Amino acid sequence: MRIDFVSDVACPWCAIGFSALERALERIGDDVGEVELFMQPFELNPAMGPDGEDATEYLTSKYGMSREQFAENRARIVDRGVAEGFAFGPRTHIWNTFDAHRLLYFAAAEGPPGSQRALKQALLAAYHGQGRNPGAHDVLLELAGRVGLPVERARAVLEGGEYADSVRQAERFWQEIGIHSVPAVIVNRKHLISGGQPNAVFEQALRQIAAEERSSAKS
Picture: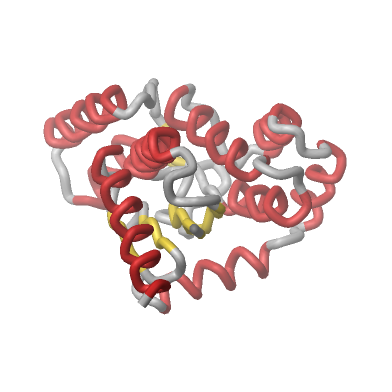
């Protein structure tokens, strides 16, 4: 089973969805066969400058919310995170995430098995849990080393602009096939599970897809 997880590091619902998906996969175990999980890029704020912006001011303006509505929405997100095993911390700033996506692409292309998945977890925790800048090269290099990526090679990738074209091409691909909000979970390139669903929903959907495909293979 191939799973493409289309998301942005800046997206809190992606943090919830990724944690829920991981929990669902843990419970499923080997029941659906071998699972290949790929992180795919999507930018919520592609025009964001390198210095970023205040999170409250930017998000209330972008989504037309009052500060009270923003606080209520934030509280709901934190509660959902707790339910799915993800701990949200202070997130006072919004930053550009393009270089984070480049590093994730590098991890998939050149890193050891599992490093892209581990890097995604580390990026989500650093940003949503600790309020760190996922576009800062020092943060990215620290996380790269933590998940077993060669740090000097990662530095060369970040400083040289490698994988930029690959990320942009992938972003266009997902948008052209109709992905306009994240997280989006695409199973075997044909089944879409949209949004930061509870882990039970992911588990049920993955088991059902696997059963239907097994049945179809036999007929």
